Length: 237
Image (tube, rainbow, N blue to C red; front, side, top):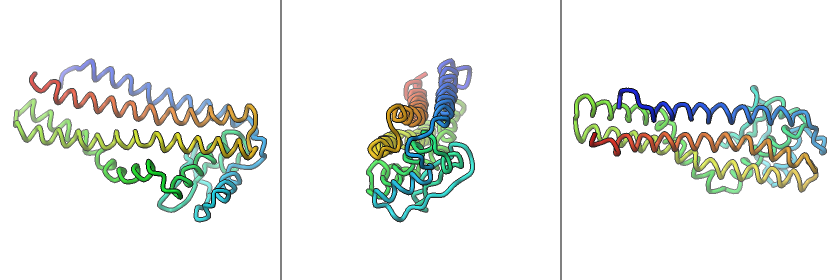
C-alpha cells in the first residue's frame, strides 16, 4: 500500500487531465465568445436585473466582483456577483454567464430540490474534504504498521464516509448547474437577447463550464472507488 502503486499514479495523471483540460476549454470558449456581441445590446448586469424582475425575484441584488470567471450566486446574502467583464460586458459570454447565475437565484427562489440538497450536504463537505483523506490514510497506515484491527477499520471507514459526502455534493451539483444553464439559454433565446448563432455560442460557453463540474465529480468518484477498493479489496493482503 505504501510502496509504489501504479494505480494511484495513474489516478493522479488522470486527475491532472480532469483539472487542466476543462479549465483550458472554459477559458478558450469564454474568450472566443467575448468577441461576439449579443444582439440584445445589454450588459451582463442589465440582463441579470431584467431576468430577475421577469421571474418575480425582487430580493436579489446584482453587483460586480473582482477576478476572472469569479461569477456566482450567494444564497446567504441573496446576491448575484458578476466579474467585471461579465457585469459590464455585452458579449455572448457576458449575457450567458449572467443569465446562468440568475438561474441559480431563481432556483433558490422556487426551492429547487437539488439546490436544497446541496446546501444541506455542504456543511459536512467542509469537514469531509479535509478530514476524510486524513482519516483514510491514518487508518490504512495504522493497519500496515500496527495491525490494530477494529480501531483501524473504524478510522478508515469514517474517512471513507466523510469523503463520500464530498462525492455526493459534486454529484448533486450537476443537476443544479445543468438546470441553471437550461434556464439561461431558454430565457435569453425566448427574449431575443441572443439569436441564431449566438444561441449556439451561449450553449458552448455554458457547456464548457458544465464540463468542469462533470470532471470534478468524476475524479472525486474515482478517488472514492480507489480508497474503498484499497480498504476492502486489499484487506486480506
